[in-house]
Length: 235
Image (cartoon, rainbow, N blue to C red):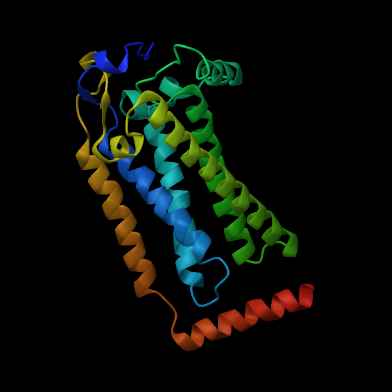
């Protein structure tokens, strides 16, 4: 069981917990979602929005694979628990000895599953809508999923801040350098930087291809008019 019960004064030294692929994935997904959200209402930035959405889909696919074969705390078996376990963890936060987990806590594990599922569905409905494979209702589903994902992201940020204050550890910094206060036996041996480099190179390469194949200003205007006319006809 990867829990710690030591007081803050007795807390062990920092140990490598999060491998590089998990950290790169985390920040790339956060950046992609932010870009997709901010560019959603602009026809001018449509290609940026689409690129960010496709990036999210690719990142989710990678995280699923890494959750099966990755390092100890990256694997789903390490942090995916049932709802009752998550409720017990949340209840412990109001007690004298709140549970402390080296990896993701049970509530955080459920949030990660929710974010992965919402990111995949948001990207899928966005692709279906852009390909005009369904009616106007698909756009509404896409927007609803994006809004729900934003709510989960906000809840996740609030939970990270609260947990950082409660356990007196900087979880945001831990997702940058990968280290948390934990016994060496609870850590991982290798950061797997090579996998992180491949992941980052793949994403940057995809962005470059999207940039190189970007339509001209005239083509973008024509596409925007087509989408506008389609939406007008459906209304």
